[in-house]
Image (tube, rainbow, N blue to C red; front, side, top):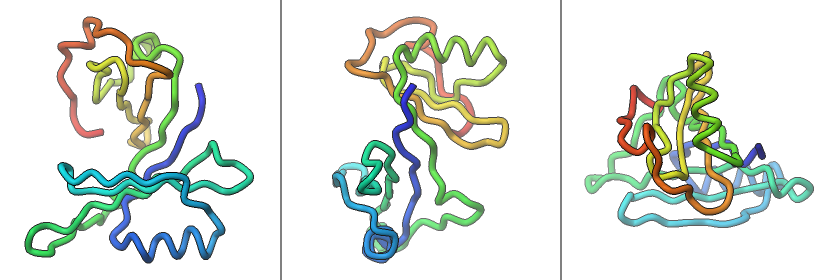
Length: 144
């Protein structure tokens, strides 16, 4: 398993970049605009540890200029880990009694929550695995 990133939702992307980049000295590693989802992802890292990133997620304002309220800690998103076999790890977690909230139906991504309700994203290393039951037909459970 390899630690990938921690996701934080931000209300003002420019102000956040000023804080993380100018203030803390992090560097922008890559940026992705997703018009169909109306959000932007910006990955930042410290120069000495570029493999450990912070993902800033900026959800674009609605058509009337309204922005999302991240009260109650919802601005913290998730921890992410790349794993060698997403199906095996999800089966292992399930056997330990943990709920797979977003099953790896696509052979690529899953979400589970810690006992403290921290979302943890699991991403398959390399190419997606072929669809496999019981995961392929398993529905989402709760929030992740």
